[in-house]
Length: 255
Image (cartoon, rainbow, N blue to C red):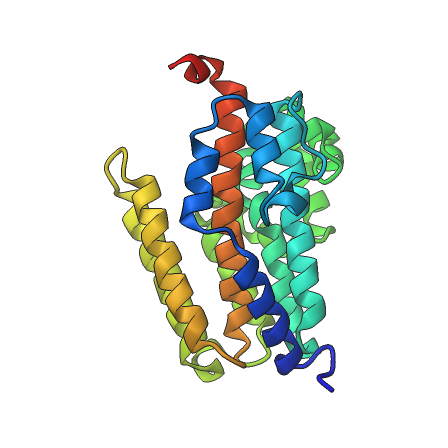
């Protein structure tokens, strides 16, 4: 019997989830649906169904964004529960990724937006006076990101440093696949930053293919859990784009 919390158990669950991901043909069928209601009906017949819980045809952009952030955190929690205890802190830190952009916005002196003031994760920080926000951040679950408050452009580096600190052993000693994953993601980020308009989804597709290859190499390695989350993030981002395109650009329906 495979024990929960072992790499064998995690591998079995990760492989099952990976096998459920929808293929490109299913994405194409979703993309051509002009109206959001039939698009949702079609998507709910696929493995995207759990991510659409809480989203309806009348949902606005803020509701969609908040719901998908919640589903991301649930995905991370699920993967954490599968993994051996020493790997749980570094994996759990991935739940903070959707918080980097709004935190950077506040650190740069930006005013809280309406959705941030309405979000339970951000309401308290937004209600505080600007000069008190750093102390409040430093006392909360995202305290490690307080190091980026004075240098918001480095928030990604600060997040990565904390992630590496949480690993049960130095990144160089963990194994080749996890190091390869870091290099693939950093290469993608650098290339994406300088990409010409119109190349974004092609680059995401290339990243998806590279991650899928890495996942095959990661059998019974902790890296598999991080690759799984990276692939889920790409799928969630793609679903988000399909939803928001129909909500924010209604003229697209008649194009």
